[in-house]
Figure 1 (cartoon, rainbow, N blue to C red):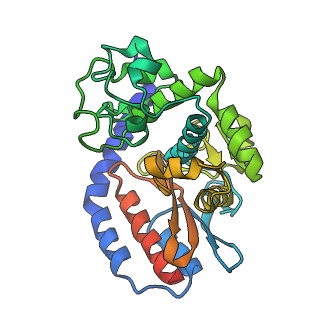
Figure 2: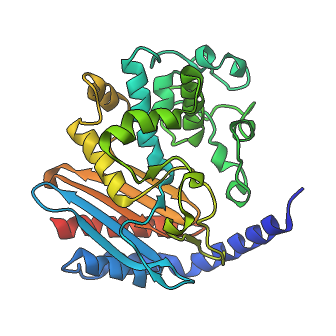
Figure 3: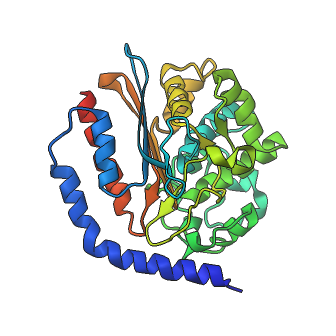
Length: 339
C-alpha cells in the first residue's frame, strides 16, 4: 500500500518539475556565460547564488598544498556554515571502490572477468535475458544490456532496501541491447557485482573494501552506510520541491571530499594496487565518476595536464536534473580557474 508520505513526496516532485521547466534552463545559460571568477572560492560562492544550498570543493594538485573550499550551509535550518570535512553521500562514486575490489579479487584468482551471470548466479538464468552471455567484465563496463532498476517509475519516491527487492524490478524484462553491443549506465550491473563479490567472499564486500582499500590508504572518513556515522557530521541534502532535509536517508557510502580525493590519487599513482592490478583496472573501468541521489551530487576527476584531483560536492538536486548540468558547468569553470 502506498503511504501518505510517499504520495505527498510524489506530488511535490511533480510540482518541482513544473517549476524547473520554466526557470532552470536560463540559469544554465547564465552560469555558462558569466565572467570567470579569479578564485575557486568566488566560483563556489557563485554556485550558492545559482541555488545550491552547500558546496564543498577539494583539490589535490601536484606541487601544491591541498585546497579546501566551501560555501553555503552544512545545515540550512540550523544555519551552520558548510564544513570542508563534512561527510557526504557519494552515491555512484562508490562504483570506483567496487571496481577496485573486483580488480583485486580477479588478480587473486578468486573471480574471472570472463565468467558469466549464469556461472556466478545460476538461479538468475532465464530470469535475466542473456545471463549466459553477460560476463563480469561487461557488468563492470555497463555493457550488459540489463535494464536499470533505479529507472523504475517513481523509484526515488520509495527506494528499495534489499537486493531481492531491487532485482525484482527488472526480472523478466527484455534486454535493452545485446551484451557487448552498446553502452548504457546501469545500477543493476553493480547490484549484481556486489552480490557476486559477497558470495565469493562469504561476507559483505564492504568489509573487504575496508580491509583492502580504506585501511591501507589511511582513509578514516569513508563509510559503507549511514549506520556507521555520526549523523551530525553528514552534510544536509535538499531536493527542489521537497521541504525536508534528506541526510537521514541511507543511500550507501559516505565520505569526506578529502578521502575521495586521496582515493582517486591512489588509483592514479597506483598506490592502491598490488602488482598487475592497475593494468587490470585500466582495462575495465574509468578513473573518474559522478554520483547522484536525491539531495546529493558528487564528482571526482583527475586532470592529467594539471596533475590535479578535483572533488566537488553539491547538496541540492532537482527533478529534471538541471542542477546536474549546472554542477558540470561549475566543475568546468573550476578547472579553467586552476589552468
